[in-house]
Amino acid sequence: MLVETVILAVIWLFITRNKHKFKFDEFKGLPWLWASIITEQSAQLLIDFGVFRVVEYTFFIHLGIYGLLFIFIAYNIKSFKSLGITGVGILLNAVVVFSNNGYMPVSDQLAVKYGYDLTLESLNRFEIFGHALISSSTKLSVLSDWISIGPPYPFPKTLSIGDLIIDIGIIVLAYSLSKSVESVEISEVENVV
Image (cartoon, rainbow, N blue to C red; front, side, top):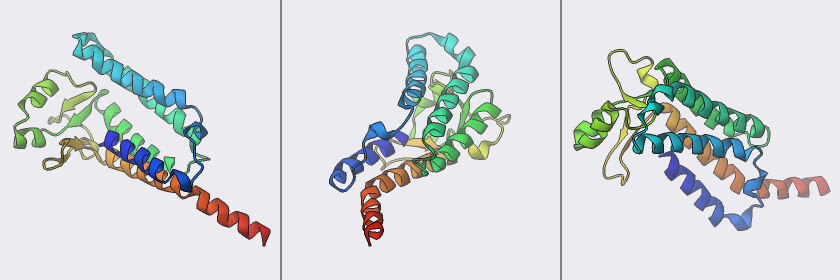
């Protein structure tokens, strides 16, 4: 759902572009964000191409990914306060991932209910980077991916509480950015008076 939320936030900022002066280059440390995204996608691509040794380093790859995300947030938290909400969601995900040896535990309820056998097989074979099925040894399962969003939603998936908080943070950030000029204009008027 994160991808959909980011796309909707960008569309919102595009639609409201005449009401705000925000430019994406106002974010500091964007290379840290891009590096985290590229690292995670590269790990998945390596698994897709049969380089399963990546699985042996999942904990350390996730350590790098989360570290890069926290660096990006640290660079921007003063200017974009709502990134704090996103940071809490990322922290919750990191806690459950590192409590489970670098894997985000995933409930199989959605896959079983809707017959997504390939997803179950992929999770059992560790073919989805950084994810494993919830088991009796799973720690902090309440923070794992257990919130199922199935059909009629066009992209069924299972989310964690951290994922939902990240999405809320992105929505709040996009909304606050779209309203930023109005508040600046009001404060400028108040300063003149």
